[in-house]
Image 1 (spheres, rainbow, N blue to C red):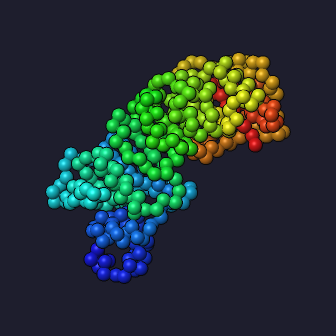
Image 2: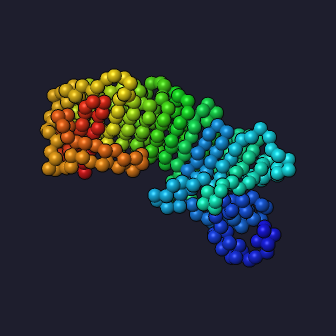
Image 3: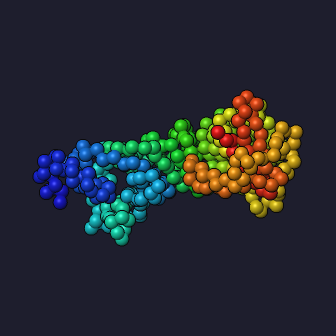
Length: 345
């Protein structure tokens, strides 16, 4: 195939390449220097990309249209040894790496390129990242899912990343700050594991616009008191009623939280605690939520975190507060194990 392909004029090569599946396109680029150059010149565009990085595995996924699921097109796997019968040397950057390449999957819609190497080290990842970026033109921002481990420092700097999801072992604040130094302009940060350490005024998580913590603990409440972003979701958080009261008071008086859009906080069911609603609203200028102005039951879809929350603004513990500077309203529900605050436009 490569020899026949290279015999065609470039415009024909370009048309062939642009009508290939991305898996086929990538494999074609690895066949020779000439096929790689043709692939680069074809300028294939990728709408949306996600990198999934684990300790011994790196997957690249794409989504062609909004609403579609991400599909794996390349998976790099670290193995103890390669089969000599299938091993060949792949040129990446200025280096050559022993590899095995094969197509995996049981249908054309589920096929991906499996690339086996003996070591996924920093040199390989940086070179491969550059290789990938020369082949594909990214139309939108990149998502990064990382299984965070101590060796994560070897992860290369991906371009144009606006959303990061972290999982794995407990994070220290030093580890998190070091990682976020690589991505200072994130729109969305989702962290599944717990975070150990003290938050201070220079912590880089404070500049992220939208934060979702699945195991927030006491760190989550500390973050909420200092939050300057738009949306924050905290699961298994240790809520402190006096701090929630101060957050609402500052918002009312325009002393803080002026960019806030929503807060969704849920205490750990195993904690045995229930939120003390009277302490949350103590001495605040509140008014009963008015169902004639807004629906009592709101299906609130948060695009930034990509899940839907059913919020019932009803009952004895649901109130509106008004910001003094512009009359904007926020609805708050604080009962059982929940605290929810939504600012309405």
